[in-house]
Amino acid sequence: MNLEGKVAIVTGGANGIGRATALRLAQEGADVVVADIDMERAGEVVDQIRALGRRALAINVDVTKSDQTEEMAKAVLREFGQIDILANIAGGGPRDRRAPFHKSTEEVWDFVIDFNLKGVRNSTRAVIEHMIERKSGKIINIGSTAGTMGSTTKMMADYAAAKAGVIGFTKSLAKEVAQYGINVNCITPGPTATENFLSRNPKEVVEKLASTIHLGRMGKPEEIASMVSYLSSDEAAFITGSNILVDGGVSLGF
Image (cartoon, rainbow, N blue to C red; front, top):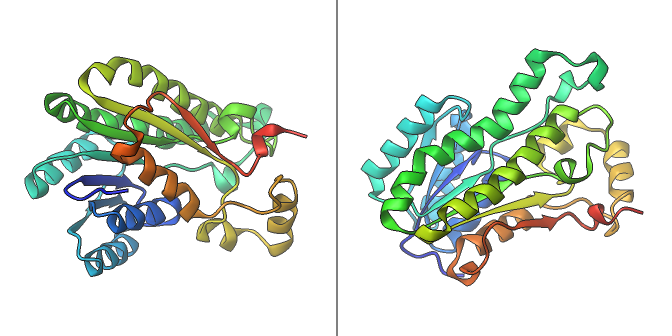
């Protein structure tokens, strides 16, 4: 896949799937903007991208704030003059605030919906008019098997609802902007062994989760990044409005 001459924004690009995505897009020839609130780790990714001979920029942005995503897009246009790819990777669950629905709070629901769904809305809204003007662009969102099957933990209805919203948003936006030559797709990962996940869970929990996946292991961030790279390329020019499962067979059920 050749992304030479392309400029990509990767939200959540400092860690996990976002980090792997930023590096993969750079390896394929793109110049990459690492958008995150973790500027120390974002700076590390930028250094790695520059070592590959590509241009890179770290931008401190909270995707739940529309004014910050708008400033992000303006900064990218000032620096690079164009935006070809938006990878909406930023997102996550309530973590230590997980609860069954009957014990859930509005505050946590607002956080999860804002981070996962509104964040995708904000970043996309910030770049879409530029892409429409250029009649070109690739937008890749990240869903979750929780958004297609419901949460397997029985304590993350908020996250499942947000990710289902991302999938629905992807399909609706794809219909709207296809006339402008813009492709909008979603990737739905299964359980993925990010550094953060592995650091927060004991080995026996990781092994138990892996045993429930048909391929017998968790996914790797690099495997999700590979699909982002493909959907960002001209090789995927006839794919839009799709929700592509990269889940090791989780969605097959038992």
